[in-house]
Amino acid sequence: MRKKIVAANWKMNLTLAQGEQLVNDILAAGIKLPEGQEVVIAPPFPYLLKVKQLIRNYPGIYLAAQNCASEKSGAYTGEVSAEMLRSVDVDYVILGHSERREYFSETNAQLAKKIDQALANGLKPIFCCGEPLEVRKAETQNAYVAKQLEESLYHLDAAALKNIVIAYEPIWAIGTGLTASAAQAQDMHAFIRSSIADKYGREAALGLSILYGGSAKPSNARELFACADVDGGLIGGASLVAADFTAIAQSF
Ligand code: PGA
Image (cartoon, rainbow, N blue to C red; front, side, top):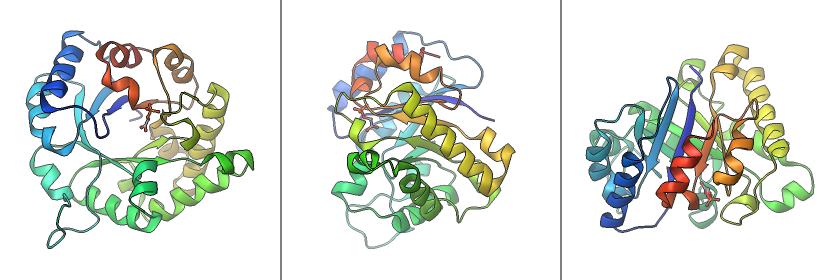
């Protein structure tokens, strides 16, 4: 079923104490989550267990990791496998964030392997895609995003695709204060959904949640989430402020 999702991507921010405080403030705000709406929190690895404990009794609030390894197990110092994440009750994993692609040279092919590891271990990938500014200026963003989807997701069968969430994050909008307009977001989300429909059929496309990410904040979330093909958001900076994040989560 197509869900509405607002996910918090803390990135490499906050100490454990600050993270606990943030989660407790969000829980204390008493976000109302109607049937079919979820909140997802993606803290850094060392805080996953703690955050899971804090959210355990809150239906509709789920835990995500920000990355996982492309290999199953073994001599990969510093890596964290999908199986390890599942063993500490992680629900989702963000894969293919543009910061991972840019600073850690993650390729579409490597991301396909991470997607497979995540799915094999019962994690739901939040697969990030999105174009850099020069691609947007050249108006070739659809082809750029289509290639990301093809090379990292389109080896999956229809049953596996049901566990995927897509986050469209135009790189020029991430952490820059520049948000895609609602029309730009809607155009790309509709394009992504039609690409999924071409490959997997209309029903699969209609069931897919597609989130927007890139300088989403309380002042623009309502307009973005009102778009027909925008099913929520992946929130960076504003997810570090409890009042902002809870306001965004209630912007449907
Ligand atoms: P931002 O980040 O909300 O700070 O732009 C979004 C993201 O990178 O997921």
